[in-house]
Length: 99
Image 1: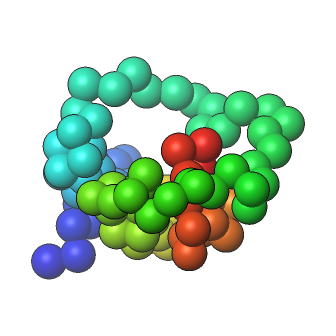
Image 2: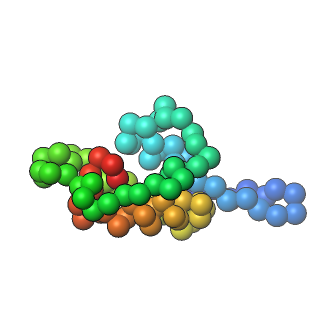
Image 3: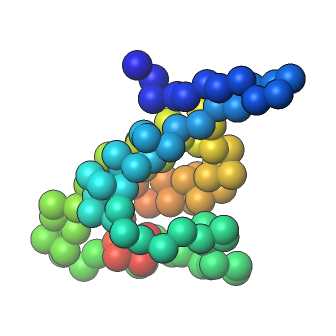
């Protein structure tokens, strides 16, 4: 129901959301993207001015939906996503291509 897989590994347990993450990637057309160990480039500087000049520029791009789905991953099993999700959520009201 929550998209979390729990498995016993030796003396402990492992939780993951691989299926949930794959569904997300498929939904946003990114299933064939290359994995990265660093989520954002070092020293990245995103500005409010990076927002679109017109509303049409980002029309049809589900930025907030993607952020919401990433937030669930970060809270449940992927705390390493926290910095990137927090930074990108600052631009949820007016996201641009740079965001």
